[in-house]
Length: 71
Picture 1: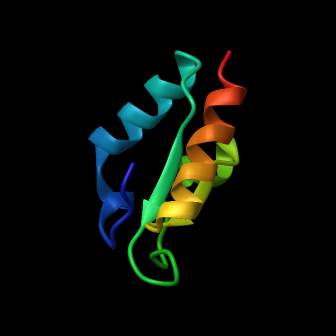
Picture 2 (picture 1 turned 120 degrees about the vertical axis):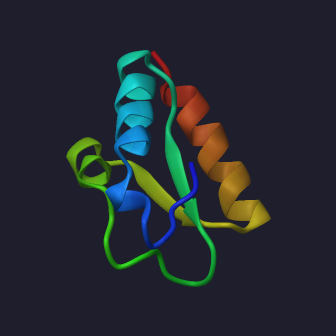
Picture 3 (picture 1 turned 90 degrees about the vertical axis):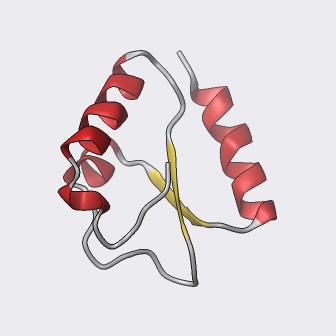
């Protein structure tokens, strides 16, 4: 899922993340630039979700790791 400066305000993103986790899906968050937004949705820390930059190598590795952790 993509993180922006307003992602933390979205009830739909909150629902989608929690529902995906409940279904055992691997969830990662990506952001543009070198650093993630300053305000993050609470569920990121709550579930220990990975946040990575939108770069091919990091994204590829995170997807592979998330897929291995699926229930």
